[in-house]
Amino acid sequence: MVMDVIAVVTASGKAYYRIVSELKKRGLSFLSLNPGESIPLDIKVAITTAAERDKVHCSNVLIYDYFPDTSILVEKALQIIQGKTKYEEVIIGIDPGKRFGIAVLGDGKVLKVLTTSNIAEAAASVTQMLEMTEGEKKIVRIGNGARDYQLELTRLLDERLSSNVLMESVEEYRTTKISKKSSSWRRDLRDGVSAVEISMRNGRIIKRGETK
Image 1 (tube, rainbow, N blue to C red):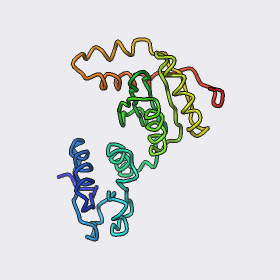
Image 2: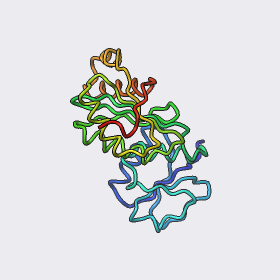
Image 3: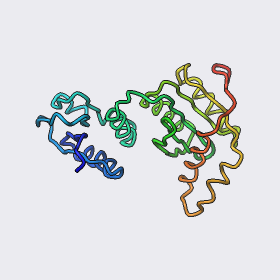
């Protein structure tokens, strides 16, 4: 029998549904509690909302509202359970174009894949993901297939990201071809596949502060 080590502690229907949906998708066991209820000692992580935080008493509490999406929230809970405070390496791969595919990897594991419809959204998403995903080393790899989009996104990220984030320009040769093998996938999913491929390739280092 698998012991519950995660508790979902909230009276918010919206938060509960989203958290539990992600936990079930991953096949994770959990305990459902109301704010104020006693949390068993074997629970390693409690997930709640900002409004209910004061009623949740556990050694490790994660706030649903503080994460850009539930996949990263649950990944953080798993990190805590495994005794890892942060990843050794966080990599974000970006496939620029009319739509931007974005993939987030933590120590080689795909944590999140998403798409955005414009440069501003892409820059905001990347910035937010890096802020919420702790890592000893952080790298952003941007595909060079759509040059104008790449240059503009590179400029925006160079302005927004911390100076310790490494940025690379990655050769996109074959990434689009690889993604199109799954012709039944929607276009946004194909963009995501390309972003994953880009994240796994070493690129040319972009000098920070010289992108204007």
